[in-house]
Length: 220
Image 1 (spheres, rainbow, N blue to C red):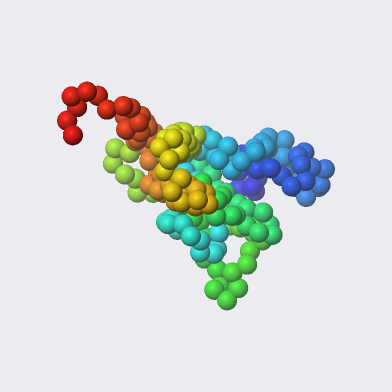
Image 2: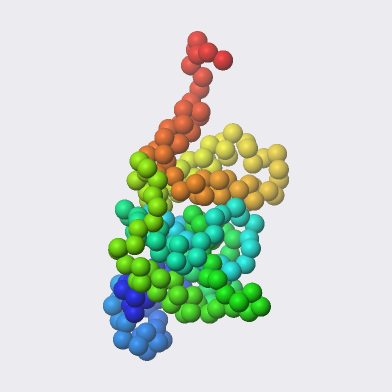
């Protein structure tokens, strides 16, 4: 990370705890990254404050997401008005589908189809290199009148509000045992479009409006 100017390391429920005595020697002097590292209980919490999150995977998953290369992701990051993030999974297993559902899009490194295995350090290196190489002078095409994706915590608030209203209305009850799958599909629907903060507020207002009792005399 530090080779390419990145210092905001966010760890989700580290297996061996944190701080970790083995991290210092392995970092080879990149102590500032370790000192500033923050630990979170969940992927969603770790994405707080980020406007755009890419989840890294080389395998197809049961999610509808656009897929970008490190080159494309770096261009989008440099065009953002807010910080973005790249989500990496554990060395052995990679990201689970539930983790990828938190991300707005998928980042895949183009490799030899006959041998696509990269370890975690290699994947971080390639993604960080593209971000550093492009620098702030590279700009991606942007949407007119669009102020960038909403902070992730606002999107999580919207998803939580929709989930709570669906639960109150008994939406999950007719399909026993399928609530988790239904929630994953719902999260996918709200995360993929990369809504702006204004759009998220509008959607939350719509949810509130739909949940209110029907006013007397209101048209059908």
